Image (tube, rainbow, N blue to C red):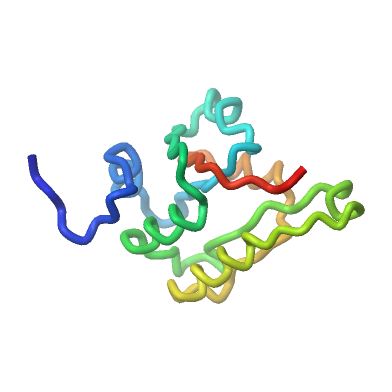
Length: 136
């Protein structure tokens, strides 16, 4: 067995293979348990599960190996809350973690508030499902 140095141990061989195949314009979705990953991935994108891992952990590990695309205006985005979530005042403190991790990776062009449907359609490369979730 070969052990690669510097590769975060929480990244599975499946995920490493998916990351190695990515190029300019490809996208990966780091999705929590509430995202309909299995339904979306029936139509083409590859589903790679990371049960038991949080999205901040996964994001940090992925960014150690995969540079953000510098040929796009915003290499990272966070799905928009539904109007009912805004009305309830749903808090998403984990988004601050994402922002901090992305900033440390040199990303200053991330954006929040993107509508979920176009994001899902645009993400035909793969879905990685972790375990972060928002309170009900």
